[in-house]
Amino acid sequence: MSQKTILVVEDEAAIRDMLKFTLTSSGFWVEEADNAEQGMRIALEKKPDLILLDWMLPGISGVTMAQKLRQNGATENMPIIMLTARGEEEAQVQGFESGVDDYVVKPFSPRALVARVNALLRRQKGGHSSENGNQIISGRMCLDIESHRFYVDGDEVKLGPTEFKLVNFFMSHPDRVFSRTQLLDQVWGINVVVEERTVDVHIRRLRKLLEPINVADYIQTIRGSGYRFSVVEE
Amino acid sequence: MSQKTILVVEDEAAIRDMLKFTLTSSGFWVEEADNAEQGMRIALEKKPDLILLDWMLPGISGVTMAQKLRQNGATENMPIIMLTARGEEEAQVQGFESGVDDYVVKPFSPRALVARVNALLRRQKGGHSSENGNQIISGRMCLDIESHRFYVDGDEVKLGPTEFKLVNFFMSHPDRVFSRTQLLDQVWGINVVVEERTVDVHIRRLRKLLEPINVADYIQTIRGSGYRFSVVEE
DNA sequence: ACGTTCCGTTACATTCCTGTAACATTTCTG
DNA sequence: CAGAAATGTTACAGGAATGTAACGGAACGT
Image 1 (cartoon, chains in turn brown, red, purple, yellow):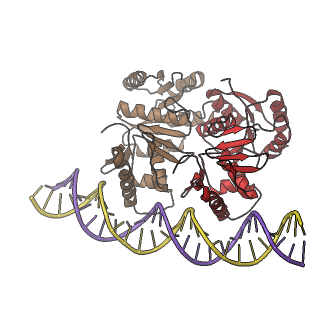
Image 2 (cartoon, chains in turn yellow, red, orange, green):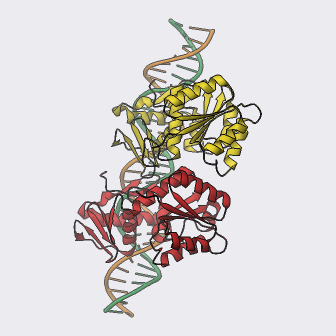
Image 3 (cartoon, helix red, strand yellow):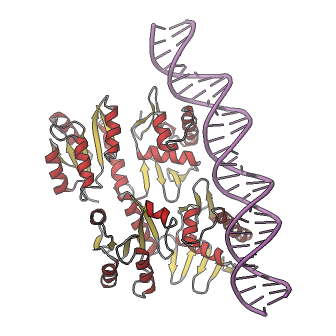
């Protein structure tokens, strides 16, 4: 499989260098741009496999650029990860509306970022780790959407309907904290009204299933914020 | 393995470009047509490995084209994936014509589409279940399409018309979950309007036939999602 | 016309899952 | 350390999803 190209659009040189170092060490080829215009040009020329896009850019903002990317047929399906500064909660919502696939809040750990990048690339197509396009592989776990099966270390683990949806959502969005409300919206669906604590119970049920195989700590509690699924050790 | 050719028949240029980009990035060679006549011509000339066909086309519709493809000996067994819009899906009595191998509802994620394309191409070559001529062999079962007979461990099991179609569909699409609606579309046909629970009853009848020979658990219930045919043990 | 076979529907039985509440435990805060 | 807040944990009742059987009718051949 060929080397993946990642386009980094970020005006701060320090962060850009850090990103380049992190991604290069992980085996990616990195293209750089410090503003949206240059970013667009490189996106069209080099056709990167993924774009890391800063939310705040001088001139044309990251959101606007994301929208332009989505409108152009050639760049329409490029995975985009948005970089946002802390405290821009509204920005994140708006980011999703503009068709961004994921976002990362600064400051972030390099490992977490790489995990997110890999997850997104995996969703994009077959990817390095999986041959089959419709399965998500995360650490020792593997989720096959089509056959509706879940494996840990190659052995199947039976999941109930909600458990399956939860795992599916978590594995598609690794290393990111979700509040109970967000989980209810994403997994249960909007317009479904249930107690927030219901989430806890289902997390518990999932953990209980994963305990015997020692993968329960993939699901982490972020006190005061919600839950996070992560392949990275605590 | 040689490069696979995929014919895209789609009138909207934007979607066509997006498809071409997506498929090309995944290593396919793409032929394009913006109407059914041109599509038919290319299908006959280039003999693509797979056809992506829009449901709504100016002039001759995608459905009609699919039927014509099926009637022509040269194009008879080309895999077809139908693209349908959400609105049309409901208007045209959700689902699609039999004769189509798979369908994708717009808007779709490029990743999902590539996954479907790969799955279909894999199936064509005989992936999981081996198709020798007009026989499908799966585990202890063998379905002979020509003679319209069904064998388990070499002994014939008599199947009714619907049971035969069900088994045929399941054995052609192993290890994949289908909702009741999908099964109705695929096995009963698009324009047949029956209760969803009818599927359950026929699954029951099929299981009852397979019980005496202990192969009933090839058909598995995925609570909340539908049914799945699989050679794998429960 | 008669019997057979198959189909779709319905009604009822059963299984399994879910949401909630109640209580236990941990973590935070002053 | 005490109290509060957040989360872990368990049990249970109700309900949704599915299994199952029986009925009436349509299609078909005899």
